[in-house]
Structure formats: C-alpha cells, structure tokens
Figure (cartoon, rainbow, N blue to C red):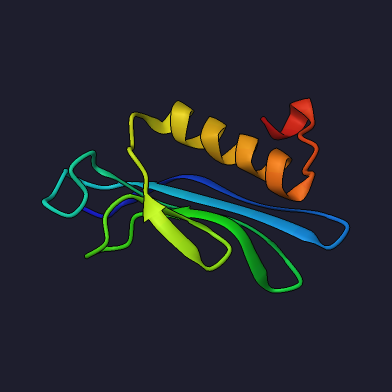
Amino acid sequence: MKATQLLRTKLSQGDVLVEMVIWKLPKPSRTHPHGIKYRLYCGRSGECIVRYDNETGKGDHRHYGAAEGPYTFSGLDTLIDDFMQDCTRLAGWRWNDEEN
C-alpha cells in the first residue's frame, strides 16, 4: 500500500513562497511513529525562512533560516497552525480564509 497525499498546496505573496505537502503513510514506522510524513516550507528568493519536516533519519524538526532544532509533533492541526504562525511572524504572510 502506498502513502496517501493529504495536502499539497503552493502559494505566493510577492516574493514569499509557501509550500505544504503532507502524506499519510500506510502504517507508522520507527522513523515516522505518527504515520505522517510532511514538508512545510516558507521562503523568499530561494532562501528558507522557516521549514518544518520529518525526513528519514532526522525525525520531526524545523528550520529557522540556517538554524535547525527539534519539533514535537502533536497532531496535524497543531503542526499546520504552528507553521502558519511562523510564516506570519517571520515572513509577514497574510492568511486568507480560503487558504486555511
């Protein structure tokens, strides 16, 4: 059984790009214990402002520019909300009701 894509969106405002991709895995694993794989990116002119991901071998973490630190995954709604708040705070992103 393959992963199921739950969300894929790519948005831009001026020179800021936001991309969110989330998959539900067929079953939890050692590297993805919650059964979710994700990549949430916000950048400007090819430079990362903030990125949340859980690539194999690193687990759940986030990037603020070049800095990287752990992220505690506690559910999809919280993940998306945390990312959206960081995009607003760090990049001045303005979320519309249609994008939420």
